[in-house]
Length: 227
Image (cartoon, rainbow, N blue to C red; front, top):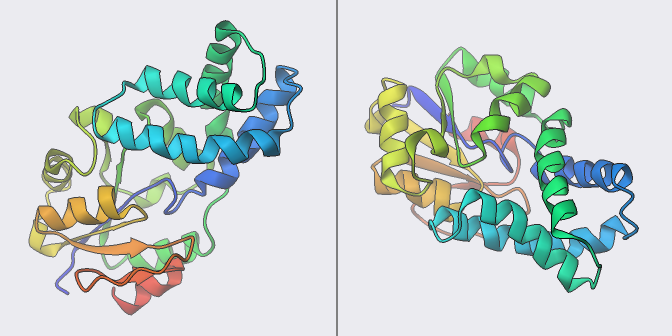
């Protein structure tokens, strides 16, 4: 590999979204006196959230529809009576509180320290513009990265090639010497491969992946085998 630039996804790759999201909902529920078992809520919410993010990537729902819809459908599914006004308050507080939690995947600092003197490091994320930098500041990883590209700043979302081409231009990088590391095969891996970048799949939940077009790793330290 003649790699000079390493692009990371943020959520579910470096920043432990599920753990931080769970803690955020516990805080919001307590603040708003939501008398619903948060574990029951999360069991329904998590797959619905993934469905909404897929629709969001495909430009089939707006940011506001995602933020409201995933909550509304979850509360409806568990038969919890709640007003639209309170759902909108929860949606806002969730985004406000989420960056306050700073759990990272194991070995994040170790792998970033290993890579930072050998490569230029960058972020490409579909996450909301207003909180991604705050997440990196809170978890003390912002200083590792040169270019930080959010899909909102481009106007489309991964896997749209415009995002990756914009990121390459922003980082002054060539596709031939760039690699993408992320958890989503659709958004991160296939998106990068489609523009001629290399890619490593971060398979954090250990599902079996066998694709000759890219390596799949289950811990961040395995990146050392390739870079």
